Image (cartoon, rainbow, N blue to C red; front, side, top):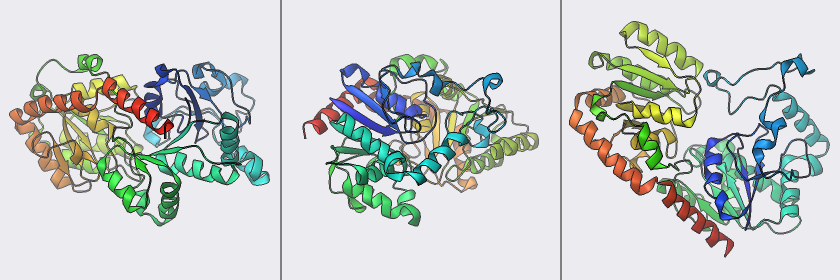
Length: 422
């Protein structure tokens, strides 16, 4: 079976999804929907780079493509004066791994697309890749990026599109589907794809409302593939109620609302003596607000540097409470990580958390922009040891049922076999 994925190449979610099927003997190909360098975690996937090459690379170990994975050394980079070297810093809201001259290729590609749209646009190159590969399945991740690109490629395709699977990530329908800028294109993607996959039942219902008439596939977390036996060692041995750490996801941007959660921590400060706060993926505004909050309340705050996935799991494994707030999301990865690691989750009601959390029993579901409500949830979670310890046990049982990598892999393999067989 040959599958062509149209997906963000920087995303750990993409890596984890593809790596769970590399042992099936299938021919896997990746066409990045964004011109950024690759995440180093891919294995046994052929890359079709969308920026400079019209013909696919033939390497089957994507980590060998050093020119894409490693920045040029400043001493040898004669373009340094135009695009000075920078490093990835999540505090300033950059996306993905940082390419030292990222804007250069983007501008070059954009100019070439305008001059020769029928040959050099990314959509045209994707169409050419489809014609050369003749894949059995096209699978696009993220409707507003991979889905849009696959839709655009159809206008350049000389022949029928292979069976097209669309995966909904996060805010695709719940947020962008309601915006005038995206509503029409989201409708077009769902009208033309054959199969639709989401990580929560809410988005299945939304897809039907958007006019999808194809086949829905099993609901599984797009990024929640865990080797539970291995990561259980990352959990602190003591009961969850003995932990004195609050972990906060630090996104404050077009959808993240970490500042609301920070304000809630300050409002609940009278109950947080002896606690400390750790913030991962903190944007610059959150770093500033956290330092000022710490000065006012005397609650120690640690800004966690950019970390790999195992370090984030260990952080949840030391926490009594894990906070996440945003105006829209699917199944937040930080939520299911917290549940698997024994941390009591407090998550905004704008996600699909209600499909995983029993409010008041295994976690709290709170308004995304109401710091008073979040503060009340924090007070309850730090004062009720029995609640927190019971929730940790129930959430671990749920993780065994719904997050185990072996079970999810079987579902995913069966899904692709079903699609390929029609």
